[in-house]
Structures are given as C-alpha cells and as structure tokens.
Length: 199
Image 1 (cartoon, helix red, strand yellow):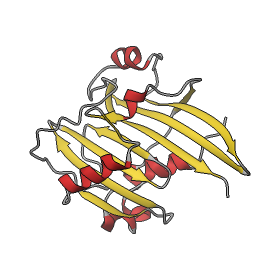
Image 2: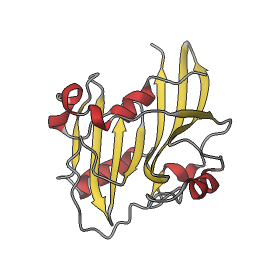
Image 3: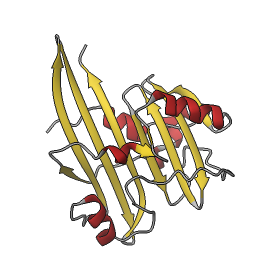
C-alpha cells in the first residue's frame, strides 16, 4: 500500500505565517499520527469533501473564504517550502481548520484549539457543518455507523489510494479520514484529498 508523502505534509502543516518557521521547535505537540490504517477500495463520497454544500476542491471556495475572513485566512509556506493557505476559527464551541496546500485541501475539527493556530471565536451565520455527520464528542459506535467501518482504536486513519498515468507522469491520489478519540469520545478528525505527481 502506498501512502503518499502528501498526506503527512497535509496533516503536519501549519496554519499561521509566524508558525511556519517555528514548526520543528514549537508545534510537535500538534502533530497528527495515523494510528491503525484502514485501506478502503472506493473513493470517499463527494459530500465528505464539502462545507456548507461547497466543495473544498474548488479553488473559488478558498478565494471566497479568504475574502470573507481576511484576518483569519493566512497564506505562507510549510517547513518543506510548499504553499499552504489556512483558516482557523472557533464556531459553536468547535475549532475548525480549513487548509489548502500544493497537494490538496483538508478540513479538521478539534475539541480544543490546535497548538499551532490562532483559533479565536468568530461571529458568523455560516455553520461550517461537517459533511460527514460527525461531531466532536461522539462515541466510537456512533462514529463507526457514520463511516461504515468498525472503529475500535483511539487512533485510526481510513485511506483510499489510486494510481494513474498521464503521458510519462505517474499520479498518486490519496484521500484520508483521520480519527482520534480520548476517553472513548471523538476528540478531533480530519478529511483530506491529496495528489502527488512524479517529475
């Protein structure tokens, strides 16, 4: 099974310009770990990669988000010098990150503020509702029913991988759903879609 290097870059990416340069020293506690890997055979349902009915794969979604929240949307580079745009805010008691990188976008939901982010409450009519139906604080049985797999460990990552060839280039496409539980309840989760191309 191939896990593209785009996935750890996505999950370890930073979300503030000042934090990019400090990643190795200050943000280790905010790293994501794969836990048990669950390889699935089909792509994620399209709605898993949407927020408020809009696809996070659409560049216009990120442009509109930056225009609406210019003080919360940060652009810069990660520790590997890849482009990273990030938004972070607290909405209705949940911390939400939306990031867009050279490899693709992802959405993260947290019970507590990420260590590497300036995540403050915002006043907005937008819901930023999870398209999966997952909610911070759900138990493993509820999460298992939603994602269609029996989730038992406290750390688990569902991954779909596919490989294609365009001309003389190989393209690796990966989708992931990362789940972390604490005391048996969902503490944070992230959905990503990443693409890596050979040179």
